[in-house]
Image 1 (cartoon, protein in one colour):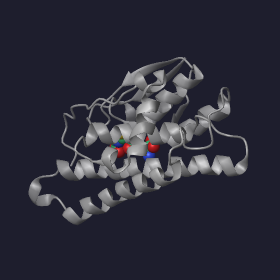
Image 2 (cartoon, rainbow, N blue to C red):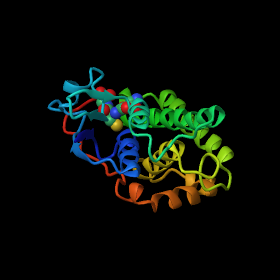
Image 3 (cartoon, rainbow, N blue to C red):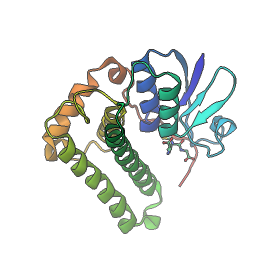
Image 4 (cartoon, helix red, strand yellow):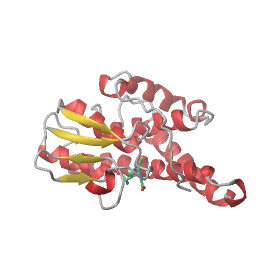
Length: 211
Ligand SMILES: N[C@@H](CCC(=O)N[C@@H](CS)C(=O)NCC(=O)O)C(=O)O
């Protein structure tokens, strides 16, 4: 059986959990705090980040977008990526934007964790702009549609839905729902799917000081 190293708030790990659930692939969930000094993650990923998918033969697969592609290739049914090239590229574009926005939010989170006199307001604002830009673009492209691409649930929805819920958990004061009501409707609908409802992000306590 597969094992997945995951953290409860991680949007990256959530993408893999949702994909595995959508495909009905059984796995054992190993929950870690990757920032603590006793994390097992570096044993499995030289980049020391989770999620990590551990295969039954002991091979490890890391980097969420690569894990998602890997699973898609090894377990193509039901497909979560369309077949024609332009549609594949459209789906991947969403994944790039969503992952980039999550990366910006992680940087914001750790900027806030610094001592106040060491924080950089311009750096924080720069990351916040990336998040705003990502939301604006997603709202524009999704419009009033049910899914990111065409009429089918895909990896684009996993990435986008995961980003949107992560904002709600990390920055409840962020006004994205009011700014983009179409994204709020889209997100609420996605969160009703069992694969989403069963993987809602939950903050973790980071014991060791990182920043
Ligand atoms: N680009 C990576 C990002 C993963 C990531 O940043 N994971 C965080 C937890 S949410 C982590 O393990 N960070 C530990 C570190 O960067 O040392 C991916 O998509 O898998």
